Image (cartoon, rainbow, N blue to C red; front, side, top):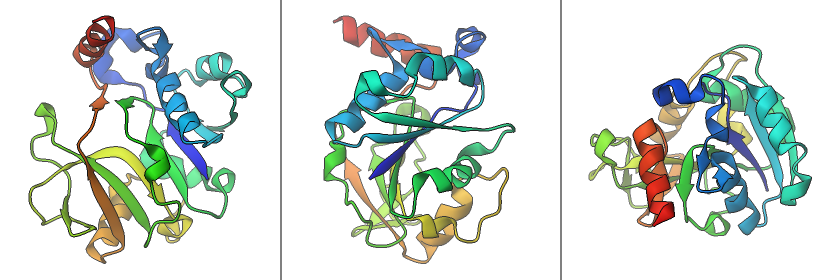
Length: 219
């Protein structure tokens, strides 16, 4: 299986921390944020990685290189304009191949066992959901059995870990679009499964998040 790490964003909520440093290269402990995600993938024996880059992408490429020192192969999908998550994945489809692929954000810290994800989702996608963090109490989706459902309760938060069939993007066009534009119709058609993960998961969205997680690492 190939994996895509989303690393194109500006990280505006980080304030001045990302003025000269791309968010994926902020540090948690001794390692860069994105290195934690690469480590997750290596532990699951996923070694073919596509990374989309835009804001200060040259810095990310200079640090990570071709992935050899991590024991992986890295190919970059360079975005010349803002594409958002959906558009970024769509642009990278030729690099991701014809089989289902994993997508993760570069700004999450988790101990989720990626090797337990279904290598082939039963339908068009399989999402990992987590308990709602304090900043997102309304959640995103719920689960009705194994199906993701926008009406099911309790509502949970999408963990930015998902496996997608290329067919999920069959009707998409190049350019800017959000993942919700392809996921919601598939969810409403009963074509997206999911699971509730109760282990460690942090989304590093703000300077405060970064400071709190780093403090935990020191402890």
